[in-house]
Image (tube, one colour):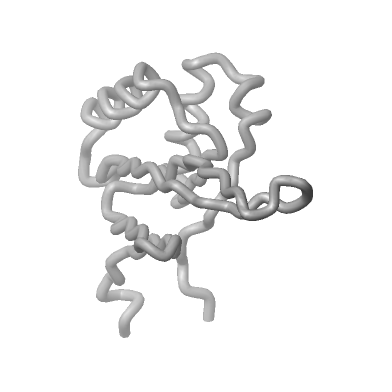
Length: 121
């Protein structure tokens, strides 16, 4: 038995850099509509985040529950001649609106979804 679920996609900066702003918005909604959680290597501009929010509000229906966006910062240790140094990277998680995104102080990130009654049975 296969239980329907969500996919997690890591989207490198190079993928988004090759798209126009409208193509990025369409790309995000296409993935969200197909139950994907996106982790973007480079955060979107404030204008693109506003466009996603605006379009999400316009699309809101029984079939589309919105989108949720959350920045996460990950600290990585640098090796080589810069040992002991660390670098912070900021990623953007975009998920369907019913997702709960948690980012703990120790760096763990989790994305949780409510379980429908038909899956529990």
